[in-house]
Image (cartoon, rainbow over all chains, first blue to last red; front, side, top):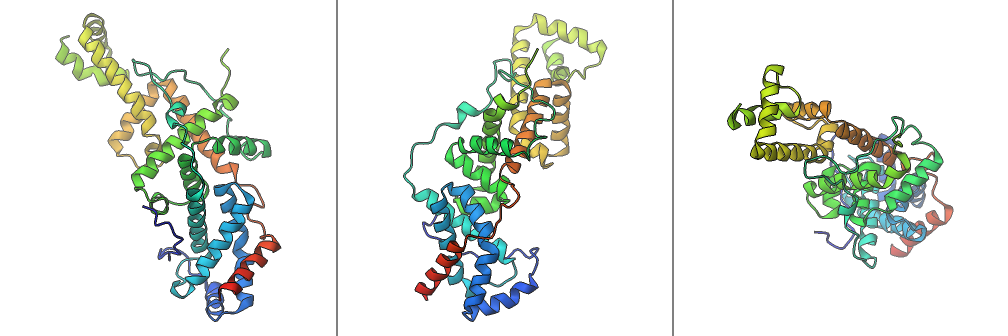
Amino acid sequence: MPTGRIEATFPTDATSPTPGAATGLLDRLRAGDDAAFAELVAAHGGRMLATARRLVRNDADAHDCVQEAFLSAFKALDGFDGRAAPGTWLHRITVNACLMRLRSRARKPEAPIEDLLPRYSDDGHQLHPTRWAEDASAGAERAETRALVRRRIDELPESYRTVLILRDLEGLDGEEAAALLGVTPNAVKIRLHRARQALRTLLDPSFREERP
Amino acid sequence: MNCADFRRVAPDLLYRLVPSAERGPALDHLQACGACRDAFGSLREKLCSEIHDALDDYLEATMAPSERATFDAHLAVCPECRDYLASYEATIRLGKAAHAEPGNDPTPPPELIAAVLAARRRKT
């Protein structure tokens, strides 16, 4: 289960590139070089802020989370072995800080996801099946489509929205997401599938093909 | 055709893979036998919900080959599941693109950089 504190973990994924340029920066950070800290924040703060905004959906909280993440990372610098890219390491710490923030917010009972999942008739057919236009995702890059999809993602029950963002947008794998959320990888897999199904239901009125 | 023979061919009947010589007798039996009609209905219900439950494994190609063959056979005869699969894939693409705006990783605002560095100085 979540420990209730920010942990700066050290990824040891041997497949991560060893950032040669980062090694010098790491030495300067460990030496307490102020300019090196400024460089690190300028180089990675933007991506971290984008991640935080996606997760906590509130600009002030997102700024706080990024600040907490950096402080947590600075504290853990001595233990960072530099084998993983600093960006990957900082991203995970940011996600952790955001999850902490989400947990600390006043909790409202979550709407049941079942209402957004497909239903079946007694003979095994999906009730009210719909067909989407073949080019339904062709406009995925358009600003108005992206805004619509973001609004629908925000309508998902929180625990499903979080998993969808971690897996489909932040690029975490099932094991990483499970570790950060304090649940099993199988629970993440099930939640992701339900979140995608629920998002499909929410998007259906906008993308379904009208039958003649 | 008796009940045992019908249940042997029922999965193939579902996928319309039964040879025509057996198909007629199988359908005659289905019409005449209430118990086999129930069993056949359950088979179809289970398979449709299983298709939907296993979409991620199918799309990520983590399915065993035999399961994949069953899945493909079902899709071949089930337009509703084909449509659902297509819309599910479109949903994933739309979701991934929703936040992928150019400039999504901008230079952080100067006040954020200043706040982080000031907080660091306070802590050290």
